[in-house]
Length: 481
Image (cartoon, rainbow, N blue to C red):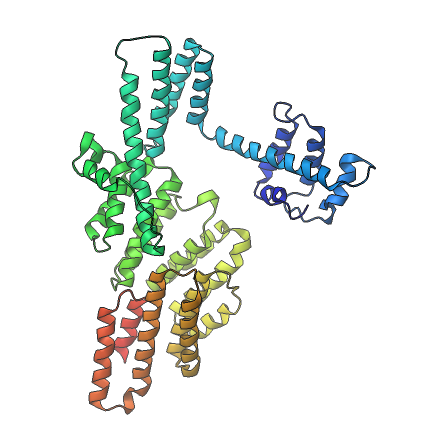
């Protein structure tokens, strides 16, 4: 029982949802099977962790079937039925949160029953729901399409032959839905093709862009299209700083037109643009990046499901520490540590304390703090190795630095979770760090000619290699040798 799919899915429910699910199980409309109710009561007694040894199938069986001999198939069937009921419960949760979909399904049923009075009444309610919503993204156009589809069907079913606007509105909103959603998907596909060489093919994209750029039917006036068009431009051209600034301004101006999850995904494109600029040596984009994060925090856009991702937490502290905004960083940790998922909290805070110590030049403290971090992900591995790299360099721990560079290079080569872009950026970091350190240590014993030649070689690499992780740090230490 402990390892069933049912238990795993139940663990995702909140305390309020446990109570609602129990009510759902007892609703005769959804379930009349007494054995399913009994199993639900038994299991829910051990919520929310479901770790009790009493949840073994052999111990649950007698509470459902009495003193008859244990039958694996019987207990498995009831577990399967309860799992299906849990699926139905989750579908109901989603349906309750989607009023337009409820109205669409209601109109479908009313059409089947040929009840024009009720169709008109509920169509007005459907329109009212859409008009009250501030959201105007691709889903909105889809809902508008569904509404006018049903209204058009209602007109046809009553043999009205005169012109009716519903068919035209249905077509117009289908176009808007198609174009806005295809642009959204094109951005995702293009981004993934660059990062992981996925090889996605976005059919009709050239035609879509042609229609948009000719401003067909005023497409450029719809932020659901114009913003994704701008996103596509900055993905395709990481040098397009004008489009980046336009995207940033449009996201601030039109943030009410998108659900927060979609808005967060849009901001990620702006964030990735800044990161690429930083990796290409444009250190001014650190401040741009922190400004984006502040907008996301202030407007509560950055909390999907009510939590702050440990990776977003890490990125914010990395950026603010680099800018030496130490007071702001300390306040950020205090204010937002409770937003981290509880089981990830200790690791996230500990690692990021090490990041902060490193930025404050407390290298010994950074190295000591890293000993308490559990490296569960490649992002923590990479980040920790970079902290170690900087610390060993600054402390002039020669043997430790060279050993780390070699181990770091092997880790990057073998790890399949790291994108080619990040592999290249970090390999270039290691290559140049080693060269600068050798110049730092051996420089005093070198001839002037050899020293100057070594400096020129490093300077050329800094200017020509791309991307380079932590390029600004490399430029800073290079100036000092």
